[in-house]
Image 1 (tube, rainbow, N blue to C red):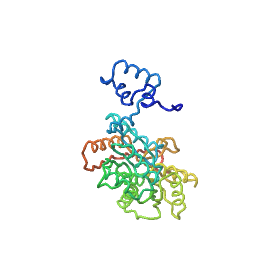
Image 2 (cartoon, helix red, strand yellow):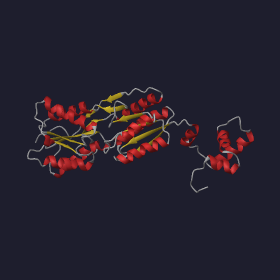
Image 3 (spheres, one colour):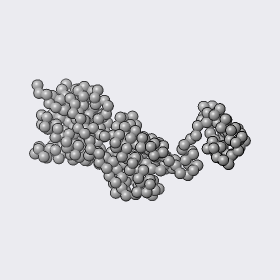
Image 4 (cartoon, rainbow, N blue to C red):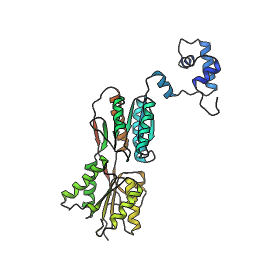
Length: 340
């Protein structure tokens, strides 16, 4: 047996000279195994620090109790909080979870789904990678009869259930807040236009301008990719305009933090010169200077609802359902003009 490798049923069976199934039944107190042999098997298992492998056991039973979770990034508070909500509901229903990250890459997303299929997961909860524009690998899950629920970044809503925040409404509310607290020229920084989440939040931003009869200026919209560097790039471009904005709505906090760096680099004050609002409300929003006003996602609840939806599908309810959980405007120091 290899050093440091976990002891398996096979190892115990080999050492005792019995079959793997005999060891398995003995550890489950099966009456089919004699008391003396059962005692020997349990004694050796304890000595060798044997721990059952729930994945292997479920595969042997051909009835896995595993849910796959696919996220673009596992290190942010946004995804970690959603995973916590999913995991708590899964555990309460006797499911284990496997978590995989696409790192925002299409090919890694495809590979993660292949891994989940090979592990015979009962269902999948997923958030699209930024690179993904072809959804055929998700359509294959329908052919494989693997229930799937999307959250936040979604696709194929006629085939899959989803849990999202109120993207258009919340962006409209954020933009209205900027306009009502002294800002006159509000810019928008978003991600790739192929993402539904970007389209909806941009729509909400534009709708707020229309309601105030403010002319829409294309140069005040910067949409490229989601990430700190793109927030910095976008804000630098916007602040270099002949008529720069005096407020920026960034469609997530990574973009907002990048914009904050650019504003300070231009020796401008937040919010006196440029007001700023972010999205998702990462923990860092409280710690940056000034504290960042954000549209706060109810992330844990999003995770809970995603898992509840998936469990319903696993139990036979196949009709897609779409749940919207409102974002909450958390006002801090970065958005309200204070005057000179």
